[in-house]
Length: 288
Image (tube, rainbow, N blue to C red; front, side, top):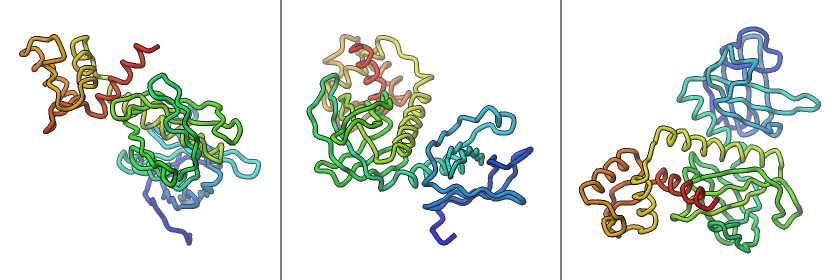
């Protein structure tokens, strides 16, 4: 391969033409293609043909062989193929992130941000921007007001049809917490194929946060403290805005800090990214 290799590791894979038990071989990713190579088996997948990427979802026909995979769906000529790749946890997680980056980085996007603030529609013009993907964020550069979205703050995501000034096309609309406020952004890419991939990436990061929150159980008092921290902002003593006895409040604060929902700062107690998601979901529930 003449192009630069961005990932190269050993793992098991399934691809069209592979019969029997998935072989162990090299998984090589460059800026242009994905190559799966083992003794007697080789599949080359042009990245321009990839239309879907799933992480952690094992296709039913491969469930007997794999526990956790990155699954790539692609279309070349008249053939549609699906390849599943399994490696150790570190390799496969890193590979998934790098694959999304290679597919999406530098893509031309049409963005409307914000499209909504809270439940209020904002008359914001759509602008062309360059999309850049990092481990947990999306950056939009080259537009009049460049911005970055922390995907840990996403509270909902959907694929819908919207007109961003170039006719009605598939758009990824996602709601996220930005500086304590629920904001909706809409992003459409020139390629419907890549719009689908972008939606997958946002949902992947959203699912990561939801998994972290799955074991968090909050009572009314804990929720009240989190909403108070959101409403009061930094520098305001929560003891002045919640009607909770001081000793009880201290216990609640310590528990929420242990859960990773609050953090002590020089300006006082503040919400973490995970805490902002919890509050955002609470606000969503109240508004709906």
